[in-house]
Amino acid sequence: MSRRHLPTLAVIAGLLTLLVAGPAGAWSSTTEAPRRVEVTPGEREHYAHCGAPDAALMEVAAMLASRRAEGKKPPAADLLVEQLRAAGAPYLWPRAWALKGGSDVAAARLQKWAEKAPAGPRRCGVAHAVDAQGRSVLAAVSAAAPASLEPLPRQVRQGKWLALEARLSLRAAGAKVVLLGPRGRPRRVLASLSGEGPGQILRSRFTLDQPGRWLVQVVADFEGGPRPVLEALIFADAEPHGVVQSQERPEVKNGPGGQVQKKNDPPETAEGLFMRLNEARRSERMAPLRRDPALDALARAHAEAMAKTGRTAHDVGEGSPRARAIKAGIKANHVGENVASAPSVLRVHRALWHSPSHRENMLDRNFRRVGVAVVTTKAGRRYAVQLYVD
Image (cartoon, rainbow, N blue to C red; front, side, top):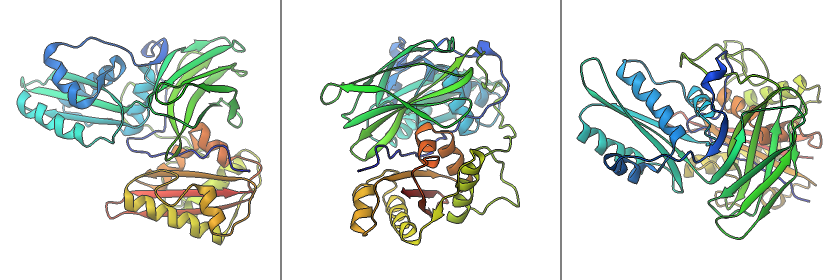
């Protein structure tokens, strides 16, 4: 019996949402994709390279352009995602760019930046600003768009039934919806996938049974393995909170997924990632996992393959996690895997913990053993693998 979900996570521009105080008025009333908008003839050239226009991405791009015009540093990547959620954008994997200079130079640089984006459908937002000296600033935010999303409300009554409908841009073998509430482990809800090829429709109905902040995540099973494709924040019987107005990185509270790097913290190694994993399980009153040398070797081989190809996926040419385990002679009823890439092990752990489908693996009561590996590239990027078996 194979593990039903094996999510993948690449912290390209940061997936983690950090929570700090902010006014509810900064949040959109719904989350949807795309937020359609008309662009001027002069702007169409930008979107021809960057991706189809989206009003929520344009809103965040305007914030970036304004900051650059004021001489401020761009916001941290995780705070950029917080702004996308506040603007009502469910996209993952955003990329941001800004340049101060002449319009012709900026347009050419924007085109080169856009061409470096991973293949696949994309959405984009472009915005202009002018600094105190009258110089033009151009900014863009682009994100992968493997799915569209019908509007989901931002605020609901606890216990009210919600209907989610998403249309996939790429063919998927399956899909699921995972909820992460204010307390407890993630839970999977009933979902159906209909249609063939691109244009498949995912439908789900669910209720939120606790007051507070909920993260709704859609995961699709693509050719390289399952990966999150959409996320939405919904507040049950609560005011929206978490939007960052200052755009500066806040101090993150201690906890299983929100530690600030300190001298006595676990090391930036596979052992450190393993220590953080078991610390997170203890926070939920769960028994620690046992590290297995054979699983470590499998995890290490896959982390090296991801680092070599520059791809964060469950299959980069050596087969699925279950296929790799069988080939290595490892017997297990269930196999689960989390993969991620980020600038540090701390950020790998934080991103995995704050993703519903990844936390589902981390807190699965069926798993007893785990293999953990971290490979660091010459550029300093970490590719990490957690391979679980029962």
